[in-house]
Length: 347
Ligand SMILES: Nc1ncnc2c1ncn2[C@@H]1O[C@H](COP(=O)(O)OP(=O)(O)OP(=O)(O)O)[C@@H](O)[C@H]1O
Image 1 (cartoon, rainbow, N blue to C red):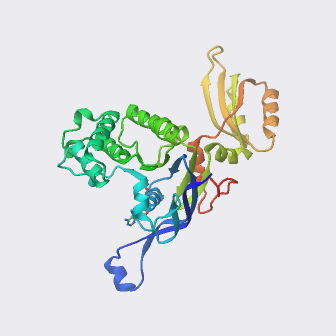
Image 2: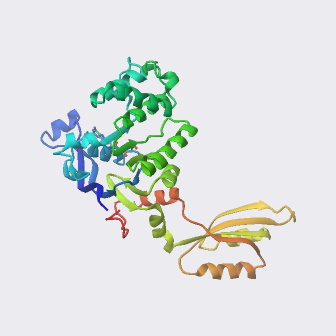
């Protein structure tokens, strides 16, 4: 399967303007922020790819390089086999970029006029543009406000207009930088369905989007990359990545009609954590206890035996999958190391 996006040791350093102190002390030393540090990713055609990472991780920089808005410092980036440094013009013809940067709109033009302007920039004929704009405004539920000035739009309306603009040229590859930020939950949900079912499912487009929203990524993406400090920490299918953490299994154990004294005993068991208690409805002097146990070598069964020996009644015992949120925190907490996944190099 051909790759739609490929990056090889992609690095971006932004120069930093020095303060007077630095200029006096080190007049020739250059200061820079490394936004991307040897990033290698491959994304297949017709994939929905999520870039996940905390603030300042480098997501926007990566997207901007792939959209040919920013040049890399070193390394290579290819979009449909075209080099971002040499083939900018060709790349811009096949991509759409949804960014919530309101400064890129004309504040004294209406929403519709703004879209007309961008359609003109993209050489879309007047007639075709009008029809497309009408459809997009309808889809984004902006028809009623289409003839109001952009400066009077709410944050969500501006975001909707940015999405409509990104789709104007019917691009093959669409980059979206936090597309649902500023949208109300219903509109955000609708957009997510539209991306998944229509853009990727029916029309076979490739969508790469950056977000902090873990739930969005889980329901939406085929593949993800977790980025932090300018590095891809881990990449692959969410399921595959979750499997990596399965050497350490997590169980949830619930006990009913337990004695209060059992709580401290459970708290002393090394593999038990998140111990919570609630009063038992049936027997007032007893409690229900729920806790998690992390286990990587079968010692969970020893623990269950001990609980039974202590006279506990186990009402529920099941294995719990790691949540994407937890996985995200763990990956982010792994310092500078980059995790390996079999599929990582060939997403
Ligand atoms: N034009 C610029 N000049 C200098 N530094 C920049 C510039 N753009 C980004 N940076 C720096 O590069 C790093 C990565 O920023 P980037 O915007 O790519 O991160 P991000 O993951 O998109 O963050 P967020 O989720 O907050 O939007 C940050 O340290 C940021 O301060």
